[in-house]
Image (cartoon, rainbow, N blue to C red; front, side, top):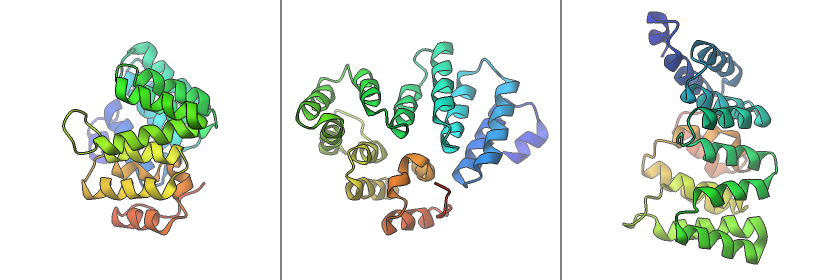
Length: 213
């Protein structure tokens, strides 16, 4: 990415991808400067706004991150991962009912997962909804019919407060070489940070173990 920037300092994509490399390595303030520059270079790119929002999330600026993700959707209403990232930021703000509403929207066309959310919510509120969805996804993992990645199962166990199970699924994701693994230092995983198994995963990935909270 540094070479790409040297060759073309005005390449917005190189800037925002470099910003994510910096985030992954725990250099979040440097990352923010890069993603802000990417936005200046290409203010109408939904990708720039999405990546900028993720960098803001790494810097724990969740209101600003949500605004960036919403701008992404204004530019391109179905842009991938925008709703997922809004939901994550809402969860970090403690706005779990609003977070659940986003997931209801995301899984509205999947009768199985939608039912799991509603059944879980009826029995145990938002925590029950996230646990029921995680359990249902775990049942589908590796089977034909639905594409489930282990890191997604991790997220819902995390939201449900089932931290040991969340780490179990991160370990599955590591074994499967899932492409989202370099992002496990994201603040979304702060509740897992003190667990030795989580720290070991960071070491295996050559990622910073001590990241500010």
